Image (cartoon, rainbow, N blue to C red; front, side, top):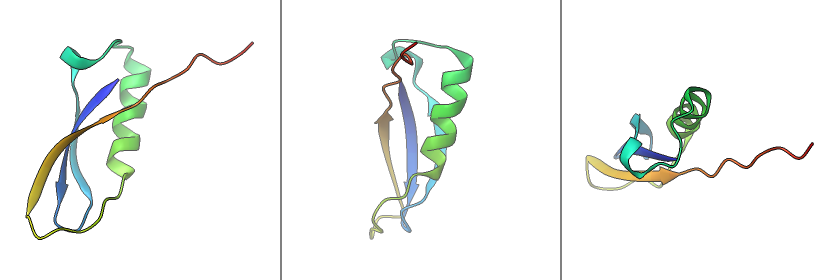
Length: 64
């Protein structure tokens, strides 16, 4: 699952949205969780005001 992100100069993710074209699933629960995780991510600070990128999450089926 791929999430598009925008990171501010402080290293905080300020925007996150689902990249349907690059993702293998569109399961609503997984999308919500991936966006939540992305918004909690922290990166190194930078001199650029905003940077765009992606985060890829791989959710594995739980063993029964």
